[in-house]
Amino acid sequence: MNAIEIRNLKKMYGRTTAVEDLSLTVPAGSFFGFLGPNGAGKSTTIGCMTGLLDPDGGSVRLLGEPFSDNALALKRRIGVMPENLGLFEALYAHEFLSFQARIFGLDPSTAATRVSELLGAMELDGAGKKPLSEFSAGMRKRVAFAAALIAGPEILFLDEPFESIDPAGVALMKRWLQRLVRQGRTVFLTSHVLENVERLCSRVAVIRNPGRLVWEGDITPLAENKPVVSEGKEFRTLEDLYLHVSGERSAAPLDWL
Image (cartoon, helix red, strand yellow):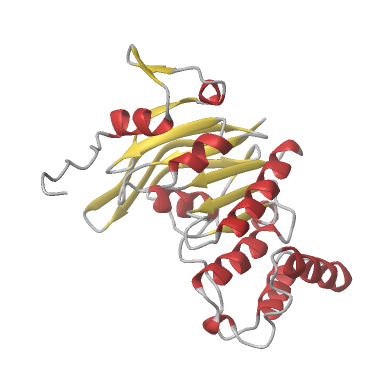
């Protein structure tokens, strides 16, 4: 079974096209990287796949079922960490996670256990004396990541999860994500940190503005120091491949530096 199937997805903001005729298939149990320049439509695509935005065309299927605003049972099978985090800043961390648990239908005992375990695992159990509005950017990211995990999702959508996180926190998140994939769950990740994507993901899709797919393929050869071939050219790093297919260029050197 495929975890995600998008067909001819389209999203408009007024007269501006954010995503145009995008089709993707993500196998279940895969670690999938979704890449593109700023403004290419990555966050918009995730919003359309998770119910945060209404698409203007096309279809989305998750876990073999059509996804819509009314698919409440299906929504309880996915976890989402949006780019803007979606935190209720007046709440304390344990209050926000408890609220998330109730939204997903967890019973009070299970919810309390998971909240306690997640706060401890994310090294936030000592941060209960101040609301989320007073948390640092990295601590807020940890809370949002814990909230996305609390219901044990079958698909986890992560929009730029590693920004502002300290190295220890990033290492912890990577271990958890790799464990989820080993269990047969699916992780759909956007990130500008290509080194993380290269180490974590087995497949990658690259889009360009306005949300058009320009490349999709297996990048596991890179982990074995073997090239990935695209358009007859060999690429030995994800960065080189990405710059080629996305049309972005490295910054020109400055003579005075």
